[in-house]
Image (cartoon, rainbow, N blue to C red; front, side, top):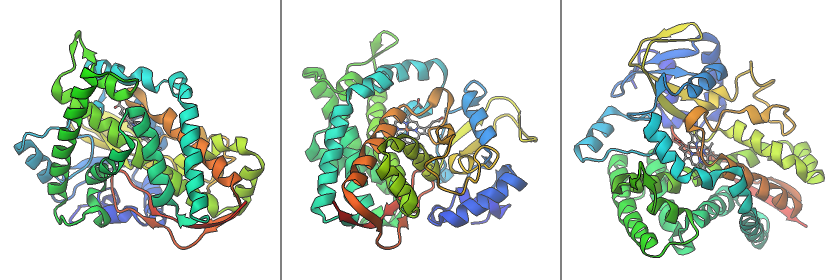
Length: 414
Ligand code: HEM
């Protein structure tokens, strides 16, 4: 990769993210030496990597000066040119600004409010019980990431969305077709990640157009019904906007949460004293869940575009440039978190993490994600006397959404 400043490659190279220790050491260096680093890499429109907590948080909150519209996720220019040539222009909530964003976000906002999510707690409890049962059936020895975290988080989000259980494998495959495009494990028989994304989007389109038609004909008490019958500006939401809404809800919720759960458990298991503390006091699961999310920061970045020049950490960035907000780096910023490289479920300000972004785009599903983690964790630990790693974890090679994809664990069941 021929960048001018090689330090910027950690934000582009998917393989760099698979070695978290090295990645975080490099990010720490940047926070100190070059907190707003201009990155020029062959095939990529240049961007400025923003690594300090204060800047990531500040930019996120000023949606009028730092826009989302255009490409919100880093990728080679060629990929966007080819998508454009095929007439595929992603237009999810993430890709909107201002009034358009507010109107579209309002469609599903009520469903994600804490009170509404709390109403669904019994359903989350049932699913968590089911997966602790599966853990028992596996004798307490499994790949926690693939056997528990992935299917559990998928089941929760699909149950509120309204996708039947038998279609979950399709959803998983399609999500990995988009997010996992850079990880060799998910490439299947395709050697071209771009072709896979294009094919995936076409498959999503078929599935969701059918689903929308069905929910219009026979409404149910699920999120799919709300989206399919939504109005924006007094008119039915158009076909493309409906489709992209389905895509964001189907894809944003499970890989992210499952990476937080499996990477968080990995960190926890490296601290047996903290496992014991949680077993003794399940009430700690709320803070432990936030620390797991801070620690893992499964969403590696989003982009913002400057409407006017801005000065961040003393660096002047001209209008029209784009910023890469590095959530994993911000969440290990020593000016915000004491001993940030230490995983600590007692951390007093774990809930100040920026893993969910901020401002008007603040993660719509954060309440669900937090509840999923804090619901499963105490149940899992209550089922075991001892639990520990049973091999080395393996990280996904992905520069957008990633984390521990294989986590061998072994437990003595109670
Ligand atoms: C630990 C798990 C999760 C993490 C780390 C995460 C992270 C994020 C981040 C960083 C953003 C962008 C925020 C910004 O630009 O300021 C976002 C947006 C979003 N997330 Fe999540 N997310 C998680 C779980 C979920 C879940 C469970 C859902 C449920 C469907 C969800 C749905 C969304 C949606 C729809 C948006 C777009 C919001 C908008 O642009 O208005 N996420 N998430």
